[in-house]
Length: 64
Image (cartoon, rainbow, N blue to C red; front, side):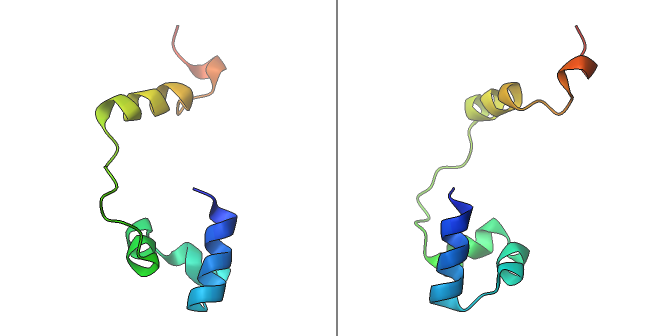
């Protein structure tokens, strides 16, 4: 998601400050911005791919 574009949109269309934008949950932003509800949730395979790409531990801390 292009956050800079979303913040500009929040400011122009909804009069939100950046601080107010960041306090919104993603669900609140989607409702406010009218994003389609047909977005599919993250499935297990996509989650596993993200976990592999962005592990919670630094490479030197990871178990062999």
